[in-house]
Image 1: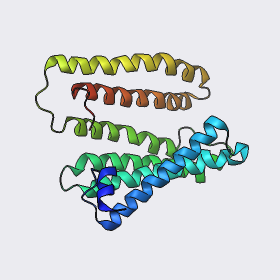
Image 2: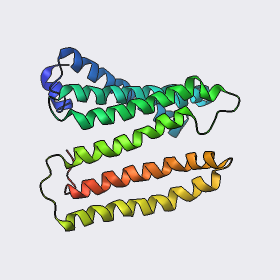
Image 3: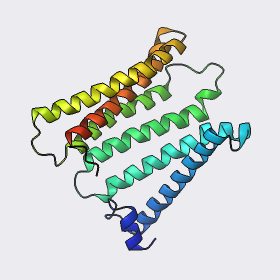
Image 4: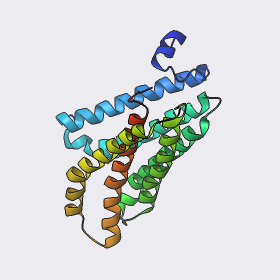
Length: 211
């Protein structure tokens, strides 16, 4: 990919060498192709039942690995401020490892355990993501007034309330089995809502600026 076109497509990856730029571009192309195939299958039934297992297992695992590669390359492209990116990349890597473990082993068991090692790896993403998102969002932010913090808090709590209304009850109604299994199933919508609320709240604190 020519340097000028690369700079336009990936303005935050200028610290990468020629090989790194090629790897990053290839990872993005594969990721978009994988997501596009999954979307076509989910929305329009492309491939039918023949591709269902491959899309559910293989495509999702490929996507997680590619995202981890892209974020780790971000770690390598900056000379300072690598900490939060490395924390985020570690969380995504653990999440991808959990998916690979589930696909290649745990789901093939007669009675897959819940919670399992995959659950531990999946859920490990969230505290790491929380820490990374907070650090990245507040980098370069000057003194914030109490009113702005209040706006962020309201935005975060608002999305939590909406999400809890739409998501939490259906998951709770569908949950069954031992208490630890129910708790594990409930953990996912809870940590997802917290992450969405955190991102929205911090975006409000940043004045709704995306960069």
